[in-house]
Length: 68
Image (cartoon, rainbow, N blue to C red; front, top):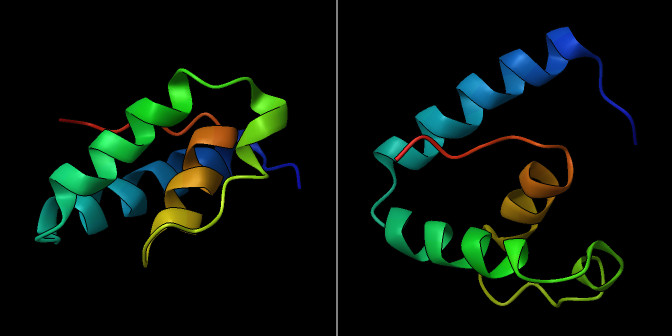
């Protein structure tokens, strides 16, 4: 799935708003950082370890950065 620049900007804002308000923010950041260390080919094979893992995978694969 390819997203446009406008969609990417909007999604980044929504993604970070969700993270900012979520009590599991540290878990999401840890998982995001784990994805950074993996080859992109393997990321899609990682099982959804927890609720929200799919969102983090999507964000990482589409270049959405976490604002810490």
